Image (tube, rainbow, N blue to C red):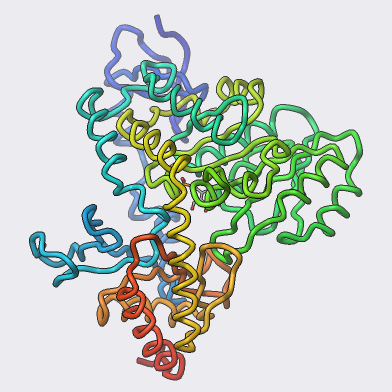
Length: 466
Ligand SMILES: Cc1ncc(COP(=O)(O)O)c(C=O)c1O
């Protein structure tokens, strides 16, 4: 029987009549209860009108500012063609049927994070389809509430083995795995100090910010001298964690994982490494930079995604069995959400297994990256040389960046995402190219030709005046 009071947002708590329950609510303690009809009605009629709410005025003001700065986000509806990747269909135009190669309405995408094209690998697709037929569309609950399929356990074991760790834990996305794991780790003991690279991803920052009680020390990006100075200045007996990424996806630079781990050992810190943009791509079996550099065993917790190099969806952490078990039992972002659908898990499992044993996908990716760089250089298109697979073309202005992207699409049938603030600092706006195994020489020539024509033309013109 339900007793007590339920708080719903800003509305006052009211006693519940256990005899008249109609609708589900979640109370502050996270427990699902049922709300009486009478209370539902009261909630509906007593709220402030949203049209007059200060929050709505704030929304409009901020959106107007974003528009004026040329960084308003317009999504481009593009339907990926599984049989023609990286060709997508411009979803605002009628489908041309199945005429390949490129036909009207087709767009060559240069910004996908499905770096290896595993999301369209027929074996991955078939594994997903088979699981969809066998197990249905959704997981049906959290991992605790009927949402654990043997496939979940199998994938966690596979990921643990990929990274040479004792255990793995799946989350619904890479974002959630970072946010939930960091927040949970950093609230486990009093006095945690987290040393966070200045360019860490928003999901890591969210986890760190959510850890009330932990202190955060931000060190200069990839600057080990600064990290060491900050470690040395911290109390020796405080629990410490260094949180960093291997491949930074916007600048395409790579952390010195070995040296960071050595510092961690010297100062008694744990290491938490986000390998989201590296898994599948680096190392002999695609386990990431830590594997490539032979230091997987030095990293305490490795975090990754199934959504980029593995072409599917979901996130995970891998590490020591007790630590992973603790996260499984304590991380809110793991416990209180419906688990990944079995079809996604089956597809990801197939993908991880293929990527581990077949290095040709990685080899072809890096050959394509080198070829694109050669062609851009030969045509005089400026790009930032990086030690990774990311090819940034610096533009330095949000309006210009968005305009170049728009014209690449409308005049050339090419999609390249403009990367503006807040994803990168103002003044460093860029186009971010991610060549993949399926970009042909002809596609590269088309891109290089288009950039060569558009970049100087638009950089000279005042596109804001247009
Ligand atoms: C460094 C980094 N970590 C985590 C994530 C989140 O991963 P996911 O897309 O699987 O949520 C991203 C997303 O792009 C990322 O760039």
